[in-house]
Image 1 (cartoon, rainbow, N blue to C red):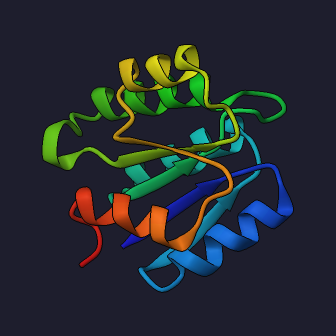
Image 2 (cartoon, rainbow, N blue to C red; image 1 turned 30 degrees about the horizontal axis):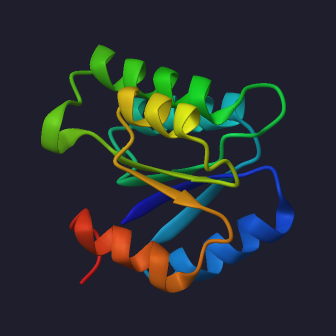
Length: 131
């Protein structure tokens, strides 16, 4: 599985990388702009991401804006339905406004920090990405 971790906090990147490294190869982006560029390059190389873990509160471009842009890139390249990447929001924000916005912009799951291995792998199993 090809994974993109989008997180500006070093410790959070390390934790997610450790958990997800068991499932596949992990790339890192530290903000939404880097995430969009990595995602675009992967699509153009015909080596799309299977999973993106996306923080909301980041500098330069937040995760909600990045989520909308990632889905737009997929639509432009006809990566829809089963071909689309699974996106899990991984954030400290637990308010209904952000949760609703994320699901309206087509994330598959929303995990509130602190992220534990059990919580993460429960979501991965629901998405068919782990056994």
